[in-house]
Amino acid sequence: MAFVIGVSDNDSTTIGWCAIIFYLLFAFLIAKTGKTVGRLLTGTLIVDAQGNHLTFRRSLAFCLAWLFLAPLPLPGLGTALFVHYSRLHAALYDLVAGTSAQRG
Image (tube, rainbow, N blue to C red; front, top):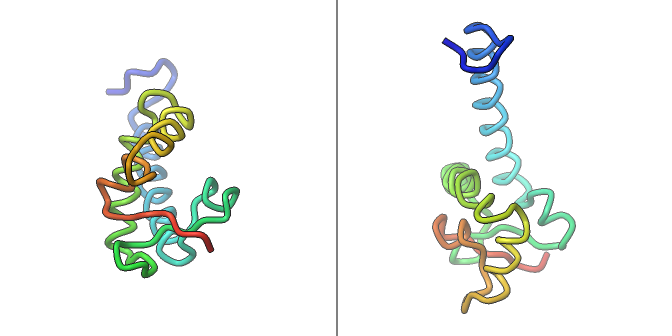
């Protein structure tokens, strides 16, 4: 049963499938291009520990970490502060997924 007023169970299922498809497409685009919207703006690439482009599997891990950790505590600001003050200058989701930013 849906908890949102005016949303039926079929709508909830559709929203769920759309979210899964978006997640997979986002992971595919990161694996293919090495960039998110933020990385496009900063001119950086997402790479693994060896400096290689991410595999699809690693990009899935990055997207999952990003999904749960990027909004903490405030979207954008929390990430920027963590990157600025961390020893490795990496976002928390980069550390969890084993990725880093590289100029590219």
